[in-house]
Image (tube, rainbow, N blue to C red; front, side, top):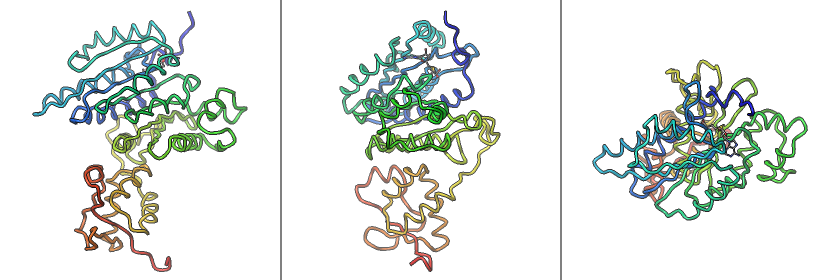
Length: 385
Ligand SMILES: C[S@@+](CC[C@H](N)C(=O)[O-])C[C@H]1O[C@@H](n2cnc3c(N)ncnc32)[C@H](O)[C@@H]1O
């Protein structure tokens, strides 16, 4: 029998960060899904599931998902109006032994109840199950949503066109893990055909920019994903650095602005300084440390100031904030400061001055109001006119 890599037996620290991001996001996602009258069924696909529990006791994605699901379900039941959705989880791994181990681990952990929904196990190759899932997703009703986690060992198994197909119903969200440091290294030293094929599927070869660093490579990939999907979609990245220049990356894709909002919130919960990623051994960003660093918003303050040289509505500013990878709370903090400094102009739609400290930069103001609630701009600095 082929000897398995160490990472197939143990959950390494970078994988722990990966499932931490997944779990923290799913906690928000499941709570939303279990608390809305507009969704009654959620399909959850873990395409490369692994065994759930590793030899070192570490919990992989299936256990993390089921833990969050169980908690969301019971939280929802405890509410006066129970709006719980049915969750249909499908765990897939092409290795029969692994999928059998997963089934056993889930049973023994007693972490799933039939009232939450259904569990299905499948041991197909990703290439085989992916078109089936795409077909299934095309039949979803408006009251159904889907989340797909794609966590392969390498990048050769996946193609971007498959992700695009999984998203095409606009009811799905995808989280994709890629070993970007390997890809970057290969892209420098004689690019192998498989990487060309991967990139060519996103952007024509001659339009793929050169990456000077591993981080550039991640940025270029994210930009190419975004360009390919167009403005109806949001693409985000979460970088996990193991060593200097060893970057793994989770890419998140959604067409729902609130999904994007919640993923940004998740990233800032884990990386309280930059909302960008996680560094191995960096004491200040220790995964489980209780130290909360304040967010670095000075760069964002500059670009927001430029953006507000023109009058913008609260809805436009909400979208701009997210597109720049920041949270509405950061924008509100900056706007309050500018108001105190006397450089902010805030007017109501009827042209009258707005109430102090009310900026309406939030998902609820975005969703509930057809029209803008407020317009904001900064006073031009002298010499800039
Ligand atoms: C990186 S591990 C997944 C880890 C898992 N998400 C976790 O958090 O524990 C990749 C898994 O995919 C399985 N696998 C590898 N190639 C596959 C393929 N082509 N189709 C489906 N599963 C595959 C492997 O057996 C392995 O268990």
